[in-house]
Amino acid sequence: MEENPFATSISKLFRARVEFRHFVEQVTLQHATEEVFAFHKFPRDDDALQFNFVGRKAADTGPKLLYRLAPTGDVVTLIFPGKSDVHKAGEDCIALRASRCTSYQLRMRLARDLRDLAAYGHVTNPDGRPTWRETLRIKWLRWTRGLSVGGAGGKSSAAADVGQELALLALRPTATAVGATIGRSLVAAAVVALLAWLGYWAAGN
Image (tube, rainbow, N blue to C red):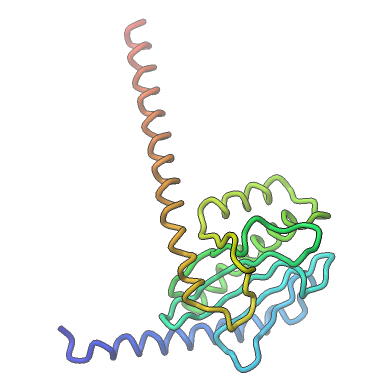
């Protein structure tokens, strides 16, 4: 056993915080003049960064993409639906992932996460005109990611309970396992069909 088992953990948590804050600084410089997405840094909280989907609506009512550094050193990535009196999304939020990431890895994933946010904004907006790719993308996210359904509403502030956010991700392995099982079943069926066809073709010749 290690002489001091907490030394490595403290070091990893410090590095995770440094990496996340560097990510926030880089994003601030890169997206300062963004017209489609408005990013928001929370006062006195360097462990959270939020993107608001502007679209045709005000920035405070559209869907939100939240990056939050958890006490474990994981970066939790969540998408919250917009506020609307006409239409309400079927979930309170979608938990995209929770993992330890460097600033570079977070920046590499940012473009895809913003595309997910835009697709979510188009799909959940009553006046939106999502493409078929965006519709399929959101259906895939709802199937393979953790969802919060039937809660008091998505928390989009940095003061949101990280424990609850991480609990959402516990739903993801179940959906992933189901998807993997279905995938294996389809592959097995394809192999059986191929073998049957080869046997029929060989018998015919």
